[in-house]
Image (cartoon, rainbow, N blue to C red; front, side, top):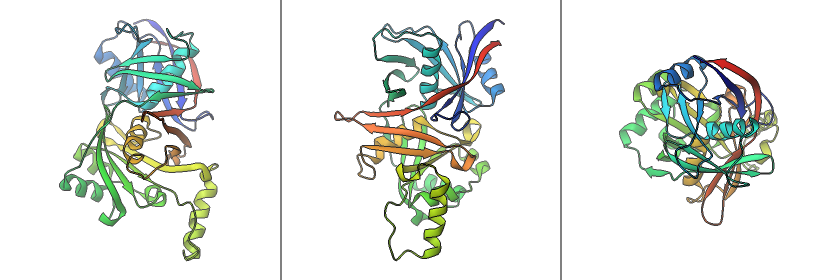
Length: 303
């Protein structure tokens, strides 16, 4: 065991303790897989990362990403949080204005948009889920078939069953059976689009409920998508804010015409968080996913 620099970073928020925390071990050299996994399980955060020297010549650093239940080839909030920690600790990219992260999924370009970091979403594969899986997941979420607008299996390293629901309120009202979701072995991401213009015919009580929800979200008028992520199979019942899922949702829902090429996603409200994910698709069709990060703990650990 040795003393190693360590940071705990809150990601997808500019306000400490309102996003998704990430443990970053800035020197992961000499640690084996079991030691990394044991430490990630001990932190009990959705992800813990270990920074290492790159093995690809163009990369600035290499990262390994662990949940309490296993290693991930790629994840979004660990990408932004690890880059934030690396830069804050004195990391200098080989190319000015561009950081290249190496992970098991490959090379991930990262850049600044003002003070905010954004990453280029890795390619995402999509396929239709089996009717059996979809029915079982809907049952575990307490959803009726007519509440699901569209469904796709999304794979950009992590595999999510993505569900677009009828509206944002339906997403926020879900009370999943996490035991059943764990037994199914499938991570599930749900999303709903908030209403833009109220229909005058909408019942007054329904409008009042929506207005109350909107008041609870400080920037609700800017939110284009409400997201929740259920990951019981990897030891996390609900992830506060999820970059990989938001990336795959954008690569699915923008081309299908459900979302504009630039929007703000909200995630974490049901956990008392206020995560904000900034999504853009550029002229070449590349999706960029960004968010603020703040360091909450800065010190050393023995590992």
